[in-house]
Length: 171
Image 1 (spheres, one colour):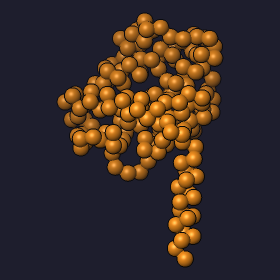
Image 2 (image 1 turned 135 degrees about the vertical axis):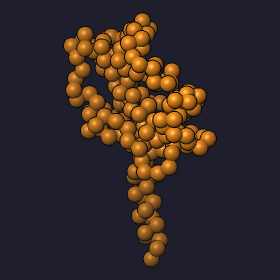
Image 3 (image 1 turned 120 degrees about the vertical axis):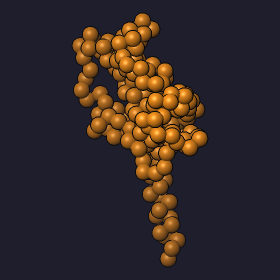
Image 4 (image 1 turned 180 degrees about the vertical axis):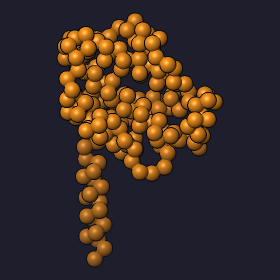
């Protein structure tokens, strides 16, 4: 009698993973490999680990792990950045390195050069979209986003990656 239960559990698990490709993240038609996302999160973890003030605020994690809140925030910024890049592309626009550097100069440093760069790109794209007539408010809620469950889950109503229950993310 246990066999149907095991098969049913397997089918539920398979269905939950069906929309996730071999990539870590997919935003509409753009796919991002696990290696790319892993490298991004590794860079942030290394930078945060080197910042004693930030470690004091966030707390230390075991080697090879990252605070879930930090990783989901980084991935949220990454996905939102890609959404704005796609919207700018639809308008035939792009940002320049000077736009990014200006946005970075206007922001408070986070303790992670990688996060600072992502925020600067996001802010530069947001500014460019504002100058082009503004962001369509439904862009973030209507995205077709898949996130590998090891990184969290996309919450379309909020436009964020939320953590899955469990321990800190293994890198």
